[in-house]
Image 1 (cartoon, one colour):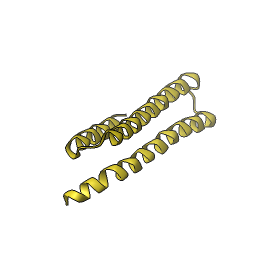
Image 2: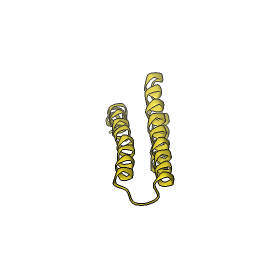
Image 3: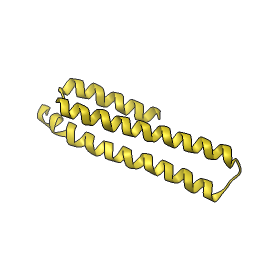
Image 4: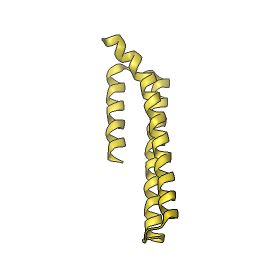
Length: 94
């Protein structure tokens, strides 16, 4: 979660420095919210599985892997959105 928070903070600072449009801000805020929500759900699922199945269980591992995979998918999508929004603005500065 802390990695996602640091990256979200970097995106916000970069957005302020680069002067994002209102629409770009909306997209950035939404993807940050989706990634942080996915991470919170993942943590909740992992804690619940640990509580319900404290012993090693292949099914529990599968459930945890699926939840972590959902976070990865949202993070990749957020990174793509970030590249689409930030790369052209950064290239103008170079």
